[in-house]
Structure formats: structure tokens, C-alpha cells
Image (tube, rainbow, N blue to C red):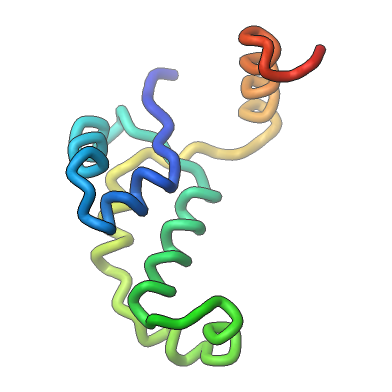
Amino acid sequence: MNGVFIDSSVFLDFLEGKERAKALLEEYSGLEGCINAIVFSEVLFVYIKAETGKKSYELKKEPELVKSIELDDIMELLGRYRTLDIGEGVNSEAKRGHHEIRLAPK
């Protein structure tokens, strides 16, 4: 499988208007760029907080406010990237990769 994993920080920088993030997302859109459910969830949650101006604990008390947020734009952005399944295979590959470059003990 070929592609580049895009961390949530790139999406968050893009939403803040940072040009480098915009260039990265444009370069790797489509099947070249990959995200996972964690990135999707984190970006969506930060987007909702930004749109409402509320903190996490405040949003928990106002579910109707969360439901009222228009999500088409952020869903379209995240939908441009392939979503990887986080399963045993991905975990094993990550562990193997860490061992190979000595980021984790054997």
C-alpha cells in the first residue's frame, strides 16, 4: 500500500489558514493521502469547538448546539483522503516499523 499518512495537526493548521498545510493537503489529496478514524474524530471535534466557541465540557451539556453545526465543508475536506482501518495489521506494521528504526525496545 502506498500513500502518506496525514496527521490531524496538518488539518488543524489548514483550518487556521497556514499555507504549508494547504500545500500538503493539495499535494496528497485522493488515494495518496491517508487518515484514520482517530484523525477524523479529532479534526471534527476541534472544528465543532471552533465553530461554536465552546469548550468540551460545555458542548457535552448542549447536544442540540452540536447537532446544529453545518458539517458539509469539513466532511468534504476529510472525505478527500483514504481512511485506513485501525486493526491488528496496522498495529503490527507500526510496531515493526518502530523496531526497525529503533524507536521502541525489542
